[in-house]
Length: 408
Image (cartoon, rainbow, N blue to C red; front, side, top):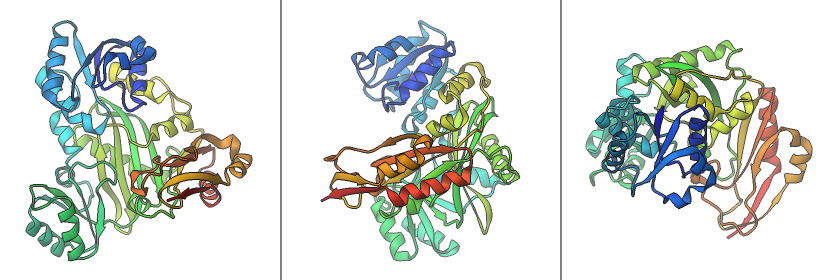
């Protein structure tokens, strides 16, 4: 099978998708923005051909290359796994007659108001929402639904650009910051109280091959706003053993079916609280923040190979061991500036060394990154353990023990 893969060079883990496609027997053709000289020996070995374009998010550029390739090979798949790339890939698929995630499905997985409207019509519980560029319409929605509300870009990923507003004045300020009234449209949603997590899958032909459930501590919006928090997320190994996850798994499958997702990685956020289990949003691509590394470490699998098996052969090749729960804790510098050192790392390595998957401690002199830059922007440590509750306690101890010192 000839598979076109969008942007094999960047970010760094993109090369793993190319490696896995080649490993399961595909002839992999890369399209990217970097020159061929930037590929390196591994990608040169895994790719059968490479074409450079100036912008992989420009469907016209990508289409031109794909049509040229179709004159020389039978292109059976065109894959993209970065949020910013998926719409261009879907557009080119449809123009060139290549199977895969459609433009309609990709749009619904990116445009949050349209996504939620489609799922409400399918009877899936989700927050009330409105997508609009009209400040008056958004204020009317706020008056009808009530505060607090969430304001976010229509196609944003994660918590980027997202804010909670509790008053009309805060709503107006958030809308102005996002450009509403100046040609921009945003999503405004009912605030859903509760615990936040995510449900991720690998699917083939609309059927779930593998699935994972992961918990945030605390919820993302709080984690990305407060320096003193050392946020965590933990993927559980109790997915198959605990009846409590049946509702999450059922919800995820209903969403996948309602949106017409066929063969893809998926990443679905959910909330559980006083109003029950509620869908939040979904992407038809892998999760960010290298969550797949945790799935691999917890389940003794090559997860990239499993993705490639779904794409090329429509099936799984490995069983998930569910041997470990695995998690990450983000460690924030005590101020903005430059890192000068760390405290408590030796103690954690002494106490939990056997459980450490890996860690990232930027050297002294490294500029700090802002809190809202995310879980892996500064220092972090990842651990695994057979018992979920023990692992959570270990991550709490890391957060209480390890200090990242910085100077302005």
